[in-house]
Image (cartoon, rainbow, N blue to C red; front, side):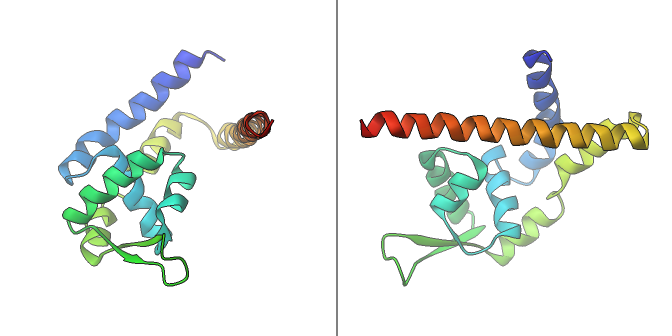
Length: 150
């Protein structure tokens, strides 16, 4: 598999949704966070960062912007005062609701050229590839942590 083709595929998907996302007044990062919060409300910044595989600083900047826009609210975690609980506001929920599945719509359109069996096989193979990629990432992180401790 050619990695450049995979990168192009991802870029085409982002290009498809970018105008819609920008029209809603969001950056790609803010859209990702808002979508995550739409389904996983009242979580920490660390949870968002880990789930979306984004740098903590990137998440912090996006959350600051989103808070100023009234899309999210933060409150101190009563059980851990060093942590904030992030919650999507009603305005944030309403703002993301109409374009929450923009990328799912795109992938559905792209995959429409596949027959049902081909789509099932593609999804199965992709799951295997993703599982393997996550395993490789975990191994790399474990090795990095092991070397840091030495």
